[in-house]
Image (cartoon, rainbow, N blue to C red):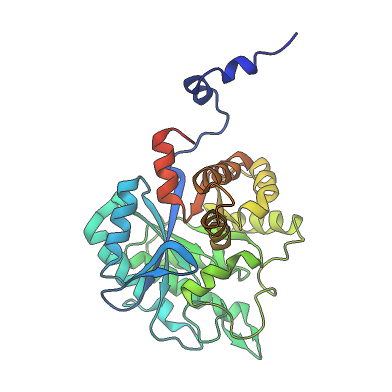
Length: 326
């Protein structure tokens, strides 16, 4: 007997009714770059349609996204001054700390603020941890990451997202937050973060490319899948509340397998290179930007992600409101 699958495609209302994968604007996270200074709003050549703001102008970027239907934000700081220790990351008057206070004053709880906890944007060498003897010193880095997370929470962060890929980071950050009275601040861990060529536009936007070597000693080899699952399990055991798989589209297999094995929410990070490829191909007329954006986003959720971090958050929120991917 033939099934009724074809009949379920009969009209648009019915197609939406029986969709297996549902997407909500609440599941989108919009990355924003904040540069130290004032009066800054500058477009990013490597990420068309995206901008760097200063702490006093970032409210404009937040307001535009909120009006589009995206309410969660992942904040990346770009300081004016860097040093070997990345000390600006944990400065209570640092660029992210200023931005957090300004955004919370302007929008209160209407904007949900997640902060990237890393050192690469703040160090002169561009690595995610302290350098000792020409290599990253994992254990010496943990106290700085912990102090950064506490400083963000003190300034108004709703969630922290440690991304340095140092072993033991989640445990150290959780202990530091709890000790300072921030037991209610969740941790979204970059648990499976591959050493990927897809990060290029971000590194240009954030000024965070390493000055020597690469990050393959602490980020993951993209040949490895079992390692990703092990790292996810370790971070959950240390207290992570949400785990990130990054980049998203090249790692749909990791997202899917992890979704079958763990109970915590999974965030797929559709990174700068994924966004830039769609933008560049669309600009040349090779693809339809809107439909490619929608299809790519749904693929991440279909694989098993609960959250999508994406530079297309505003546009996707609009597509959800229209019912194109809702």
